[in-house]
Image (tube, rainbow, N blue to C red; front, side):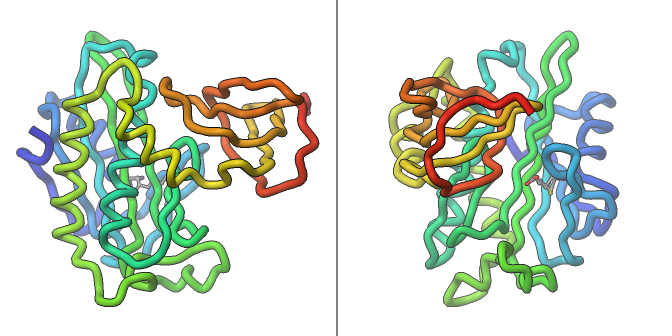
Length: 250
Ligand code: BTN
């Protein structure tokens, strides 16, 4: 069960690092590591995740499976949908999922999800979630916000935490070879930049095209140079932008 074993630290380097260390020492599936402050919070693509002390809900969940990573690659979208849904129910502003697993509130960042995997005799997944609950100094930046800035009354991080753990548990227990129709419909209803021209970066490749929808395998269905293609990896770096389709090697 997710959250049966919990650690809550006032300060760590990164809950991801602590969770992987605990997993190496045999921590059970579902163990959760939460911290009030991180000195070296990790983001995707080697970026840093910075939150003020006690202003964010930050935790990592250890998941163990014998499924191959390929079969469960869409789990990060299940996670994004679960977190987005809980956030949506806590605030008054629109909440979108930016493929593959970013969550935007009114178009601004306040939630980060980092899914890291290590394979051995079994696969260990550490799913890290950071949610800026209270206002922070960085909220002054034009593309950042917090939950409280979008809610009528302050959001309680502890009940947010409990609700998200329950949703993650449900998402994990029903995880199948592809996204279920309910999750897929919800993801597509709230898909950021749906129908818009975007630039997606995949290593050295720049993919320019139009976002169509999330596919059931978790990829992003796009129209690229007049053809439909499902993109499995990448990061949306620009959008909306004029449609000048194509794949450019940089
Ligand atoms: C991103 O948007 O780039 C992902 C950010 C993920 C941040 C969370 S906070 C809890 C967990 N511990 C970390 O060091 N990172 C994740």
